[in-house]
Image (cartoon, rainbow, N blue to C red; front, side, top):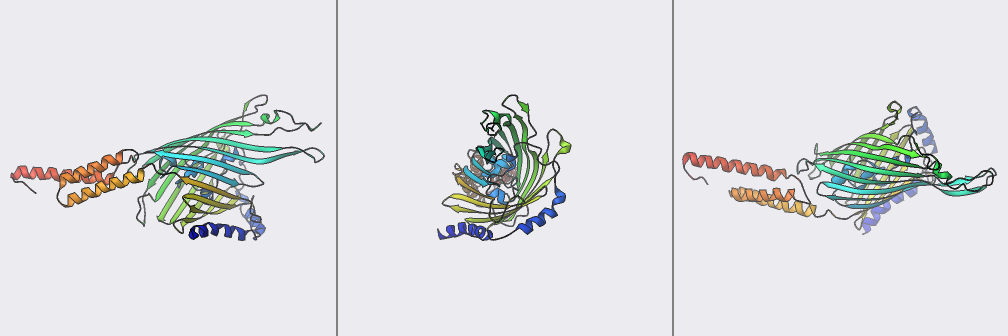
Length: 436
């Protein structure tokens, strides 16, 4: 228990110490260095909150998460991942953004065989105050953007050796709520005035996730190399619900390519390249952005992440930790860019993820392994028919729910044994001599 408390405290101690830092000179220098990267096409879309990460581990990795996608954070990055998650998960996220703005997220994901599905609701909000010509506060409420997403994904050609190609999508609906404003003449609130600037958006995501083994310097069944291709926030928005409804600006669509590589069991490196797309005018799309991150599993219950994101002229540095407390994975992340501050800290995110079991997949895989190994034992003893029977049993068990994979080792072993039996029978027929 003391180890868990110590691991959880490490990151908070670091953050507390960093409050004494004065990084204003560093921020000024970075602004000068990256001024040439200013994107003239930035900010031409609505529902910009769709680009704000839910927070936690994915943000600590610099948001380079499309190819990682090994936990419920996948909703913001790669919808294909629900088909390959080890366990069902439910999670809550809190991201304290900047200038008193924040985002809250609730997510759920579950997998049945090679089929994954889930749902997410998130809300970005910022206090909204209105003052009259004399500086008196006459109205106060919240500007908010709330979205809901439904996810479905399937992992095709899943097997023991080749992990499959996961394909998935999210269907999203979003609502931008603008509070009513006042009449400048008498400071009275004009009922329904906020609806004139409120908006309704419909968007979709699509993603591919390919998992392979390459340059792997440790023993593990999980793939150590992942490739991802995603399309995010493709759709349209409608605004002006007070009197007339009209088509709004473009949604923040983007295409991304990501790669994650785990050379050693306790080290992961991830990177991602993104291209914003202005759907109404592709020639006016934003510039490419680049994200990268590294994660080190320091102990069984504690991992540390570092990340970097370059988007436009605003470099973003992030760091975070993940620790396990009684089966609940907790994440803390801190991000520093040219719009946030380290003194005081004003951009921190938290998450709590509850793993709810794998629906028996691990137990069934163990039974498959046992049947396969029993077949190996029979084969080594010259009992080929018994070995074939055990390998067929392993193949069938692997294909059944909840595992639903192609178990190549047993398939190949069965082919070898059947070929040997066939050759043996041919020799017995030719020489008319039984062969043991």
